[in-house]
Amino acid sequence: MIRSTTMFYQLAMTCVAIIGCIVVNTAQAATRLPKSPWQSHASLKSSQVSPIYQQQWRQSDYKYCPILAIASHSSVNVKTAQSRAANFSGGFAVAYDLKNFKGRPLRSAYGVANAGTTSKHDLYQGWAYRKNYADGSYVTLGREGNNPQGKMLAYIVLNNGCFYNIWSQLSSEHLQKMIGQLRYVN
View 1: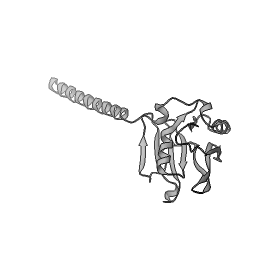
View 2 (view 1 turned 135 degrees about the vertical axis):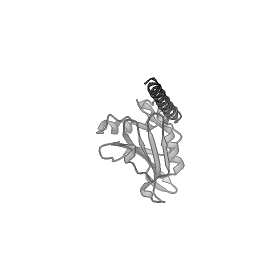
View 3 (view 1 turned 180 degrees about the horizontal axis):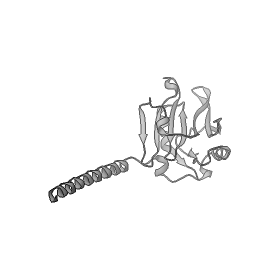
View 4 (view 1 turned 30 degrees about the vertical axis):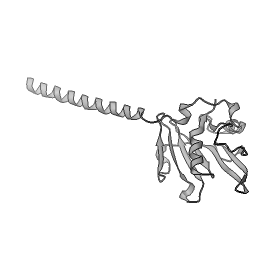
């Protein structure tokens, strides 16, 4: 009886040690994820972004979703770009129009939109670029409609499920810089 109790105790301790290692390794893996741009920088004041973000957010059905915005002074904002409200059913969106891009006007050259909530598992999985952040946010990006000529589009899901579309007709590099410049707005 003592021998079986000893064996049981050793087995139980081995299981506890293995489970402990799994928990520690999982926690260490989570801490190795990078901070999201909106987590790792101070929030912007509403005076630092186009007033259209606040106007659109106030009309949104998703006021529990924070405003993610590009600062007016951000290097990703083209100096001649004009921000405007964009149609986005139920959510809120700000598009930037260019008066002259390669010799012609370009409507919705780039922009930011909240589209309500979703799970990252419900997003399109065909794009190669995917990134998880330490705060639970997730980003994936690719060409709209998988069209080689389509505009670049990113989906962002925050840890609370708030879902954003970020787009750029300028370039993939511009879109990635936009993501890096997104900030919460107070």
